[in-house]
Image 1 (cartoon, rainbow, N blue to C red):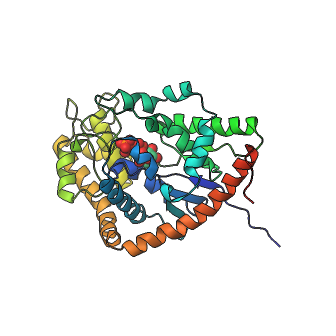
Image 2: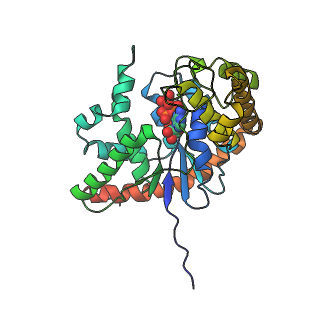
Image 3: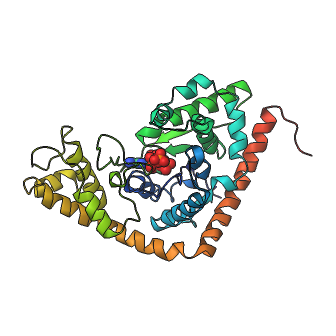
Length: 335
Ligand code: AQP
């Protein structure tokens, strides 16, 4: 009799700190959608991570529903993955505490994202911002994830999760797998439209920096037409031309055409014609996602059902790991 081998576990999620951007889609979610057959996928919406910056409770709730409907509209399938809310699972914050007690504060102060976010003028630097990577480590280790898809910006945090897994195993006894980074085949790093040397982020202050998955077609067109370009007029990918290179990368990712092919067609057509073509390609790629999203967002019963079903599996897994962790760390078991 042949035995079915358990699939390796993948864990990854987005935080509802704003509306999802084209960067979140091209750099992350569209790749997650290709992993569901080969891996057991846990796709939380990591809402506890969204409160390290000031926010309004009503916005958080609305963005969480929007994020869920966008996960589904972008192709995440609840029948082939576990989709749930981090805040609804007991275990993330508990494991966060145990791991925090193994984390030197100096390591947290050295994290690039903390340094950048806390250096922003007017930033409110709370301890949550500092402890973000420990909670992220807890998210990953709670499900004993084998692999974690990461972009460049998250590599340092994954390294911390790996170190914490090793430190826990060494301090107590073998408990966690040490998660490996997973670099998807088609990864794109989408840069800000107004400042193309920085990544596109949903919490950017200027709305012209980012393209939202839910921006109506005319807003998408307007933002792309007003994207910063470079001197000269040739459409060519070149580190000296970060604005045009970013638009070429976006065009290539949404149209599945190679950069070389696009350079050949648009090289000498001028920036205006090129930008119009980029805008139409982005609109065409996002239109079906937006249509699906609008169907889903009004169906709260279905959204709750997805969270209930995904949450049930996640909670079982989390309880199992949490009891093991408590036992290994010397806590008396509940009887
Ligand atoms: N611009 C981007 N290009 C490629 N990938 C990106 N990701 C985010 N921005 C880009 C990837 O999206 C996934 C989910 O990200 P997140 O929501 O958990 O947090 P983030 O990376 O901090 O995203 P933002 O938009 O920059 O949020 P804020 O502004 O709130 O900090 C991750 O896999 C990320 O790599």
